[in-house]
Image (tube, rainbow, N blue to C red; front, side):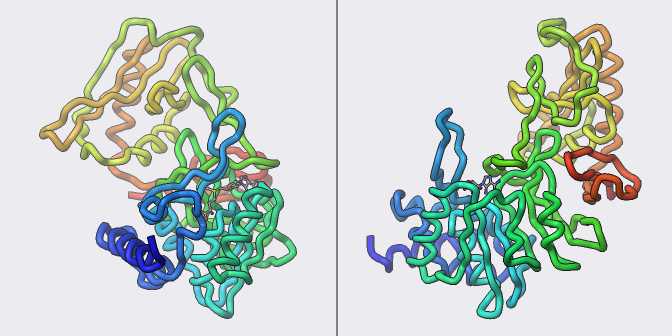
Length: 371
Ligand SMILES: C[S@@+](CC[C@H](N)C(=O)[O-])C[C@H]1O[C@@H](n2cnc3c(N)ncnc32)[C@H](O)[C@@H]1O
């Protein structure tokens, strides 16, 4: 297909993302119109280059995806969160070239963009594609992004496009006062892109969106703990957990009366349970939110709700303490009442605000709840 074919596919993609409400900022639409995405994914047909889908680029020996050119709608949502202004100095962690070109469009002639990737294959390819597409002044650096890029710091904006366990201290150090960082944070089995503003010495969240990215490699790599069919974060070593296969024991169940739309993402409810009940974990088999004690396990269940588009939430459990645990979970589900989380990040040793504190290697992530 010709360049004209690529142009019309690109226009169609921008129309689609605008019509479904993903893009609501004219500058972002213009950037998507300007950047020839197909040059960054030359191995796939034009139709796939301009589909709203991720394009896988590299796998490790075990077949795990380690690099991709991200899905346009996720990129658009994160760019809106980042609110890049003309003249901004921007650092991207995790390169593919495509998002760096969009950032370059948004930062304009007075701005600057640096993109860092740990993988030399990725930076080599990004350099070639950026040059071909006319973005030769984007700096492409091969390094562990955990350390940012001190050479070109400070930055007004940092956009992380790889799943991180915490906000690396170097990113905070390299951010200008009042600067913003958007980072996909992995927390209690879920990933959200959080936009944080630097306020004094700490970070305060301004918005969050759901997303999925490949995991960070290098010094900042992290591991979830898988034990007896349950997944925990690294810091949850002391949580109680039942021995053996408690799921084999007789099932108890209680329905809550809580009705939610079938399509509704319940990640806020899950995080609410994670930050208000001890023993929170995630079932490996289906990613369902669960709560464990030393002898029992309870997890969320759903059944048809008041109509075909709603489901009723409930809780199922196994083990000698299942009934008590189920009652506790259902009561806590009812207390959630649609509240949304906000996040703060403080360095270890700093004074912490009220809220639920999640310990990471270099920082605390504090979760607070708003009606
Ligand atoms: C989803 S891809 C980035 C997509 C890209 N921003 C785009 O334009 O679509 C994530 C990238 O992060 C890189 N990565 C993983 N760990 C990293 C680290 N510690 N520092 C820098 N890059 C890292 C991977 O090599 C991979 O290329």
